[in-house]
Image (cartoon, rainbow, N blue to C red; front, top):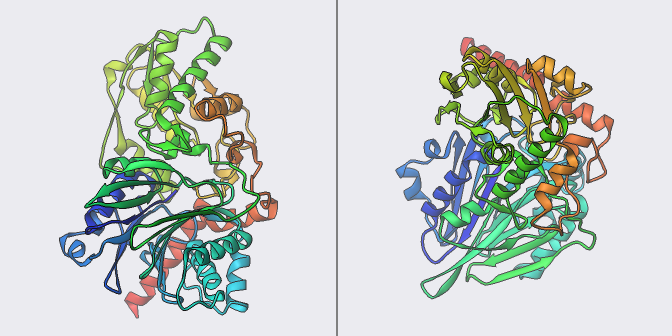
Length: 503
């Protein structure tokens, strides 16, 4: 769940890239980077931290050029070292900078192939660097002194043949332009827009349409699964489908939680889809508990507001804001470790006691993943004086790991894994727990775009659309990326630092 952006314009793009990344900050808070191209040179700034902390005036002045790209990072693979902040760069061929949202499922296989057959060195644990080198190798294989757009599309078609998993990519080729492409399933989102400025057309590519809107561009459309687009330095646009057997299967969790509500993804309004999730939940409540005693509906800010408002309207129940959010605490779901998530919930939310005292409260959240946040919030509601606390999730139970770029690597860290809904309710401390039905969630999202006949819903069902995920892979992923694994890595890093300091 990273955020990517690329711009080819007729004026300096540094400020636009910065502004675009701030709009996409919800997609990653670990690191940020911008690279621009001007007069044969690349200018790069990247580091750990939020966009506002990574880029100061001295950095912005350095980022010269009318073409550039940016990235905000949320680490699911690799580590949180600043060395793995993006964009990445390889100088051969041509000079390519690269940013990626998603996760490869055959990264180990590719890494060895790059080393043994392609003679390319991978310097980090990031699968994004692997994907970059696959693209660079396929371009080099064409053995062209000068490229034309069809050469790029040929290279991308080879990337699709070699790489499996989820990837939305922006690559800037020095002196040529910006290339963007999406995996054959369209799991991670990618959109592009344009505007007329100084009698020429300028283009933007981004993870979400909200960045396009905020910068004054007009949304054109989504990049199709398996498609590649290329905008050259003159502003000419080229597009081509690069695989024959693409299958539209976007990640449904984008609509549940990841994307901003003011975005359009695959021609679906995220806000409207969440409103429909609220409608479906209300209908389920009326079916299962027509004589419910709910006094007030309270959302857990911010993602669940759209669903909670519509649910309250459908039930004819009072809607209230019961939690005040500290805007200076990041999204708890994408915090790097369980310890950090636990610590941040109380810092992030504070209840308004009068909205809870003596009432039967229905709390609405977008999803329940590990259950850590939900359990603490339910206890906060009780401490604030709630008589009963009911809890509703706008999505079904998250029972399986996500392998396509969302930090759900270990099944045993998911509160719903191998548990009944009553067992989950007991763990969370809720008087009643209600989940969205998967069929209702799918209907809520695809209503605006019936062409979306298939979604990646693997975290709910355990069925992975790429067809290459098995038990062995999931176990390996758990060993590499679970919270315990991350803590072990942190401990090893601290030991190295301690040894260095005492040497």
